[in-house]
Image (cartoon, helix red, strand yellow):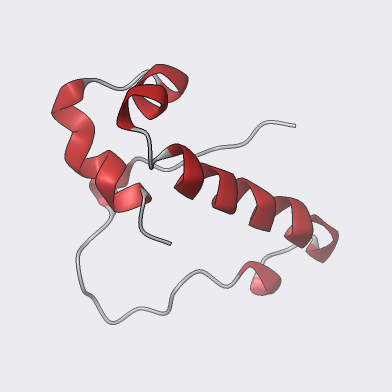
Length: 71
């Protein structure tokens, strides 16, 4: 399975759109796996060094890592 992560640069602070609702996506049988992946990404983002290494990010992207650290 390939997991595509959108670039954090496209996230906007605030906004009025609804948050991601995993249960509203197609293939509902993937909802538990998607939830696990979201949780693991948030957990990974708690450790900037590990996150940079795992996602091939640079220190200049630490602010984006911090945004991903928010559940």
